[in-house]
Image (tube, rainbow, N blue to C red):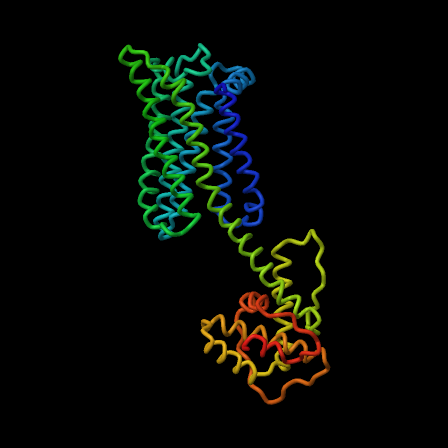
Length: 388
């Protein structure tokens, strides 16, 4: 695979990450972190897209300036480095004054570096177009040499500072799940970034001393950059994807777990009837609807529950060796089933009894699966079936 193909592949993968983040950026438009992650991914995508040799040649042709792509790509890399620093500073948090001071420091220093890059390019002799080895070809050319050193110095400084921040932060986020995974990916990515800077600088310094180690810059550095781009992109995206996936799995599990209880209560005249939602309804909407229906139906059903039988069931289940939470859930499930049958049989509410403090609906719903099928002619037998 050529360098252009590799860089385009990385650009496409990072672009997919950008597309994934767009809905969150739109939804959380007022959240600066969401905007900054999106901007950072866009910057990373732009770096790999414009660093592809075929695109470098095209940009040079369109602008009519030989090697115009060099300061352009270096500016993108510098901007990306600054974006990473800003995001890590805000991601870690701290006092408002401390964050503001660090942010303006990044803006000021990297803004000055960008101006310096373009001034050096303007003053340098860059008449020979180089698509892959500009760093080493112009390593000894006045002003072009300074431009190359400026971008490498800016990138190395950003990598060192960000690596130090990440290294310290990693110890404080252990055990936080997806956030820790993202920080580890970022830490590894920036460690590899140091390798990228090292091989680039080695090739440039070799030119200063009359040696030719250009292969380090043209053959070794680009694959490292590709892996770094993917790791950093994943580091910023994985925590969000992981949290969203975990929330979806938990919601799906709860929705399915509530199904037995919802079926048991489906004929209770609740305030919010279990209207069937279309297939296009989101899982969140369906879960909210099911939670609301179960809550309202249980409220309507409470007067038909027999507290005496419920207490007896709990005591006998505990005596049979059931754990307290399991005994409570089984007794609740039996009491609910008996109350539904009492209601359907035309029975009257039980007067003058205290309110039963039920378990969480999910626990009751799971306990319902342990109950045998109860027919209409066995009005109060569900409790007995559990404790017998």
